[in-house]
Length: 91
Image (cartoon, rainbow, N blue to C red):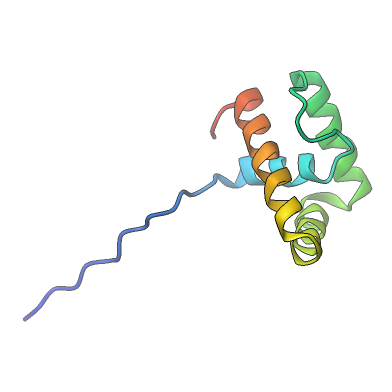
């Protein structure tokens, strides 16, 4: 009898709260490349969530951006994830 093992993941997994914050920050009006304060990030996330119809709306709009502008979208998401991690830490 042989045993099967699950394949090892080589990627990273982003926590759902971190992903939601990053998607909202991605859709915010904050410019890529800045290092905003915690209050600026929190305000930008709140505004983006209201403007885009919540977490699902932000996620859908981010997906649309990846479809239209994949290179730019990847850079902006990398920035957004870095800012969220720096401001809130990994959850």
